[in-house]
Length: 175
Ligand code: IMP
Ligand code: MG
Image (cartoon, rainbow, N blue to C red):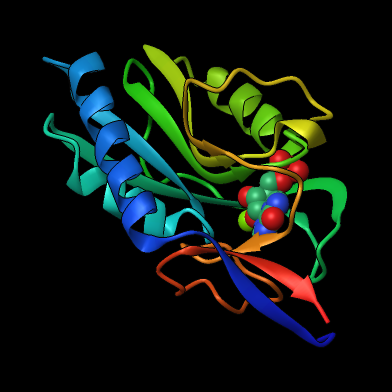
């Protein structure tokens, strides 16, 4: 790894407060329904769990893994599905939970794939959004924070598999 340090971008309290708000919003929008949260491994694990704790309607969680990134900080543009859902989502109200939307390639691919299984509804919720970097157009229903084009870590996001466990969002600054 290159020499670098981490600066705080969004502190723990700020992130937690926003997740609580998103949970309240989702709870209102899905009143009377059961919501299927699809956690995209590995980056969305922390966000999905914290969000699920703040949702008051019944929640079902399932996991999926795909990747468009190699070991470095640049997208390869190739999306690979390495773990599929365990459950069927036909006729269910589904929300895909992402850590961050960058080019949008991962999500456009996933959304198309899941639409084919005929869920009753399909929405997208992301903790972070980097709109400047968008290549594939994708409608995002719930956004935690829009951020500028910086490489960020923490709250599930990694730099070469490290820093996922940081309880805040940090920026990787190369020295
Ligand atoms: P997309 O397909 O380009 O939108 O890429 C989304 C995926 O790239 C995310 O799920 C992350 O795993 C990864 N990614 C994008 N930006 C960052 C970042 O700033 N830090 C860490 N991972 C990132
Ligand atoms: Mg990822």
